[in-house]
Image: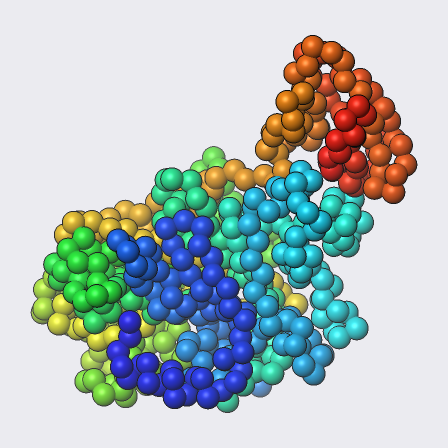
Length: 567
């Protein structure tokens, strides 16, 4: 999957650190995509099924954060890659617990069907994924009380599955992880920021375009007592399309996306996709808050220092009101090893400043990414964006093709026709960047991204396919399939049907018999709340008006058949 040098470095370095080998891992596999997710938030081995085996689209990804502490101008940085030197992020919330990973080294996977079955009373007891949901931290250990989101059936503020509470997820299946860069960080390179991250990775199975998408949302919280300035956030992605040795990369600025595609007409080898070429991309859908009134259209919606509403009007941003988001202010790439040309400048980062420079769309030594000999799609004459003398204007996006920054804030501000040369087949890593912004003590924000893949019969069609899908991803994100836990009507037996109306939030019984049926409603402690009849051939809403929110037991009095319902 990767070149031998990479595999040897992983085997020789990563697995010699017990922290990595002991990370919990689980897989999400809800549609055409399958991905391994680790307890420190990283994805590895995102694949799709082809003929008889799974083949790779993405080898690994990770979150990068860096910024300067305002009081002393010290650079703080956490950048997860392969964990060769240790962990930048560790499982769990920010905590005073001396051994937090003992409790928090977990990956929480939940399926929507399990939640629906639980709410409808169709499970044997409470499923473990509901019991283990990380809704609360230990405040005695300095952890935040509210962590993973949940549906609080009786609104008492506490997650109690025996009361009918259950995880609040998106998608048909989701994986939730909590991690931070303070508790037991083992990477000696860099100083953590003291952030806590809650990540939900989720997908849908619809038979449509959603089957090719994997969504992710990061909730990022500054749990430190420090403020940071000139902060950048990046999503680092090591794409591998089947045979990883012939992949090219690019940026679609209009779609706030980075992507990878095959360099020629065939993807060779046992893991290759053959002549039906695959492409894959990452889009930034929601980003960190932009600096207030900075004079830049950071979200590229046509509103400078404002946000466009549903009617197309620009609403001016304010400190406690509407805030603009930073969506892909730059992109960058670097090569896997340091033995290529200019490898000491274009290769793997070794210091905090190297990481920070890549996050600002600069090379390791701080020199600019530049427009170099743009020559069009598929041309070997395209340059790689590095010039040894730092005298050319800075470009913020690598290989943008025909796309450009329509706001004029960053270069390119006009079409350039700059693509990656098919001769530049180095094993590369890519970054989707957002910044700069201020990250204050106690502040939190959400970043949303999505991976999407495409396939077509030739190189150009495959390339155009991923661009089209990336451009449509924002609409896919804004108009996700409707999913509500526990609203499925189901046949309980041959005599009547029990159903739930999501609009009225009422349970109802449809009597299919030619005789009246009698029912009683009890609390879980056995207290009779009400009894009622449902006439033959009729439908009746279960009378729960005035009842407290919670779980109740519905009993058909003749058969004794019992069902759990919630209010």
